[in-house]
Length: 538
Image (cartoon, rainbow, N blue to C red):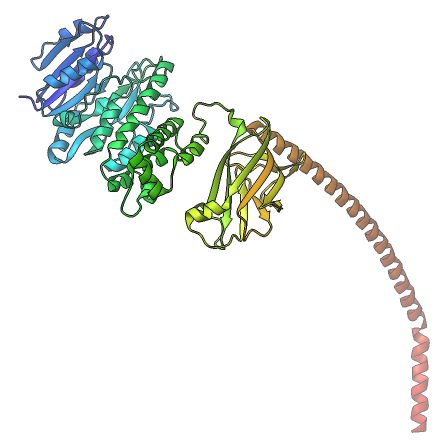
């Protein structure tokens, strides 16, 4: 009985199927069977497959195109302890199986081993499009199973199916036979495996993965693939509900530790909150809202999340209005605004109130109300607010104009902290993090209401504004240079006058010297006469 079963799937790849088969037959490891499943090819693929005379080859011809059903049928009849997957357009390096079998033999707790991959084009040359999705997606480091699940959740698949060697017993144990998934069946497999076992990637490129110029790969970047893939990914997210313990959940999502309260966690709620994080995709947010909807309609669980997290159906109603999953409103009219509260320790993410708002006039007018009292009660804060900071938008340059600020009915002042300048009556923020400092006494404030106008600045506008400000700056420099030139002229004139005065002084000194020289003999004679008279009197 062979130790390894290789299942090679074939469909209309007459140009490449021979090279794919030969890369298996030339393996340095030889204890395997090669099950080739031709999915009713309409070209000469079957004839090429049948031209190989090797007792290790088992050929299965599907009478109609049944895709993954044929693949699963081949797996069920496979005899090997280990199962390798191969595709009719890819190529293996000669030592692939040998190195992978050795690894699984030595690491009994590892469920599957993968390899790094060389991306090739239709002519088996190194792929040159560095911007293509596949160019580096399979260049992955090793991770724990928890880290892999985190990576899968946020970013999708990054493991190469034809590089895998998996223990066949886990196909049954992990229920890896799934139907209805055309784009992501292998991705679903890796999630199911990692929910129970570790995997490993040999850090050697032992597989050549072919990418076609017309995106005709099964997972090629085509509209139908993208649309179908989103549907499948939404359903794959359900697998994360099978995480068994809070400890495992926190290992996968460390930020979810805050939902572990009094040694309890409602995993569905924690997963929903993870899905609704700011940086997740819309498909995560839809999944998260669905989870919350199911929770608030389950009496027992609804009570549980109210007690643990103070979350009710009213919070769901608010949350469902924050996430425009179906793109009902133009992105230009939506804002995530933030109020930071300083309780004497500065501004931190811990003390931040966020509010999602939509323009009230469908132009650029906004109004936001921050409930400070409820925030302090929720956080069990009994300190007084020292200062408040308002961030009207994050991640984009903008023009902003504050129209009205009030706390508990009292008008408050405001000043910008990092605006570049004022422009057409707006505070101009060329930074992506506009900040306003609120001025006033907020120690007893229960709410703050801010009305403002805001316009996002597009990238090309930033350059134009920089150019305009640059031109203005150059004009200011030119004016300064003109003033400096004028001052220099005045200084030169003064220097000329000083030089003239110095010349006049020198002339006077010369005249004095000449006068003294002309009178010096008379003075000398007078001194001699004086000396003689003195001597006589002595």
